[in-house]
Length: 261
Image 1 (spheres, one colour):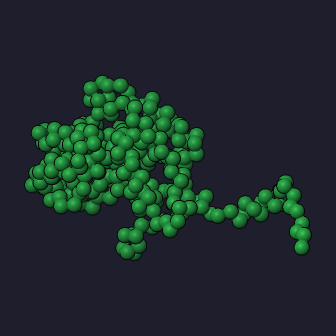
Image 2 (tube, one colour):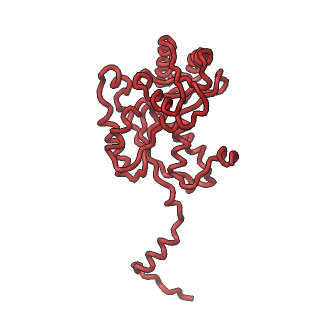
Image 3 (spheres, helix red, strand yellow):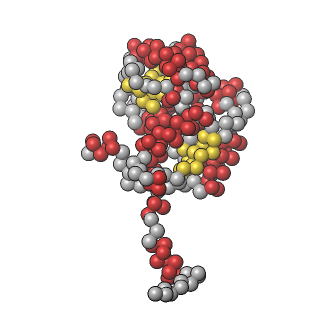
């Protein structure tokens, strides 16, 4: 039997009908990632986001745009030693991601959050604040902080946590040098377990000073396994992943939240 041929040009009514039948996957927002600070941390953020997404098929995952630009100047050098300003790179990445269709931005680099206000001012879409999200996840005080010199000297975590009534303990100078050496070793691609052996004694001393938990406040530190530490390990990268899912997928409820209801 011959079937009638459809006109290649749809009427306005047909276009509206077709649009109404499209999958509602468009409800999920497109995520833009300012990456490359460092590259391994960007990869780990995306890996954790994929693992955390309750998808049964490729089509159920989030649309994620990643601009991984490792040319961004060192943030700690800029903050503490007058090094090159990373803002031109951060602004360019933000604007490229917005132009490509990102509906909000995330940045898996703690120290770069010293520039979060400028980033937000450079685009018309929201940008999540990993440090605010991590502070919101804290349920005990005081907490220790493992972070770069720049993050600590800028007081990025101290200000946000203390506004929530959480006291932050920072390592002694010798321990802080150990943390920076561990971060550098991870950026070089050295074994993460070696960095863990450097960090664990620092966590022990923070625990002896009274810390009830410790924040992995550098995304290279997030690459270190937090199991077996003396006190609870609160990973800023995990907090950013959870916030990304929350904002990209309206109505999404993490499994732990479902269990608590």
